[in-house]
Length: 208
Image (cartoon, rainbow, N blue to C red; front, side):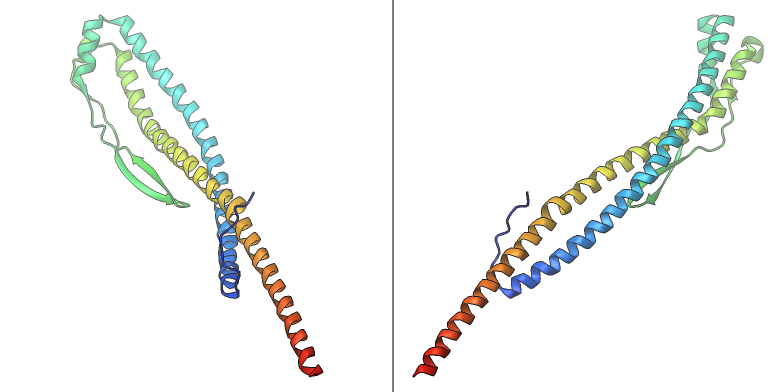
């Protein structure tokens, strides 16, 4: 139910409310169009993120399988020392772009090369293969993180936009419409009263 506005029943206020109603309806249309576009983009991205996550999880499981094989082929202490000796540059570059008023990130991972600081003779070959596979999946993992962040940001923006659309549709526009109707009725009533008074005065003047 629309909340009644406390306004003065005069023509200036009526004109002001009509202008506000036009602006509110225009804003409602723009926000509704934005909401629809955001939902469409969100669904496309969410589906892509789901497929990418499935792909990344398969490749990570493959990597873990390699690490498990390496652990079975060497002593735990030696495996731990070997992994600690391996190094690499995992710096991630962060950029942002605007997608329908939503600031979404883009994570860029420079090309990775494993720097193996351990002796190849003391480590199992399965460990080298597992490390190479892990470096190969890292860019996809970083891209997945950026896309999931973008999807969450878009979901929040959709919710904010939905609340604004509902406020306009169910509160502001009905309130303006009701106030305009109420003022118009009061002005018409005042005009009829004024016209009746004028007619009475005219009749009195005519009879005298």
